[in-house]
Image: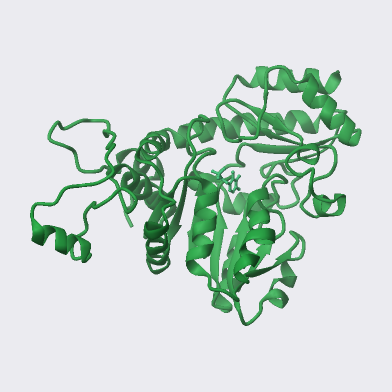
Length: 389
Ligand SMILES: *Cc1c(COP(=O)(O)O)cnc(C)c1O
């Protein structure tokens, strides 16, 4: 692994230049590549050469994007996908067989939960879950057919923190693949491989693009596992498009600078909310009041851009709050330059029972703020007027 700093890796991971010696990497919009002759073609298909054959397998733009993420995460290899969910699904589908079992932390992204509940069972793949405060229960959930230990940290939307080093050691002891969805932290704030993760997944749609433009996903890590994911994916077709890869590679160049400002703004928002009378509690990893503050400080460089808080007055107060917001967007995305507010109990998680919502940390007045890059006074000003009205 190279010793260059992450900021430099994000900018200076270079693909081969064309004959024009362009400074900024060009976009390679081509679905396939040509061969010199019959022997070149035979050898390429026989995997005797590493080269581009067809853009479902590889493309210079996707390779650049994967390379940058690998260097930033400290990973050996990776594969890039059309969305975060195609990365999540293809990773599980490539690594698991019928009859296998997954253990996961209960607070996870809604579509991943739906995949565990309704989709993987079609292939007889089952799951068991533990709550954030039941870490000591994990080993009792592991069965002879358990293959994967899966978590997010920080979690969506409750911003809970899980002890990655502890989970990594449990996975190692039981010979499980430890898989971490690192979407909320980005490779700039946290590198799960350092704590024992075998594979790391990102929805690049969020902070990696960071400007709300394209969908993308990526899985990086141990090369034996990535080879399985690559063979599965090159034959099933969830590949990232070259255009989106080009956008995402460019986005990575400014990721550290953007994340620094996101985190600065988010900490300010969290401190403001904590001092406001209309707020019951605030959850932000780098606030001293966060239950896993020490752990967050150990695992993460900064606290991230997501702040969760509970408004006094439950569901109705949450809905009223959204209706009074003026500047911030009501939108389903997160990690954009534009600040976004959501009320999970009446939207993304409305279909869950109250009991299931509470297990994932979603109280009825919980508001999630994805803090953007507008001026901090304007963000806080809007939150303040909405809380007071
Ligand atoms: C958004 C998200 C995903 C899914 O990513 P898409 O790019 O929307 O498919 C997966 N995990 C987490 C934690 C997310 O926030």
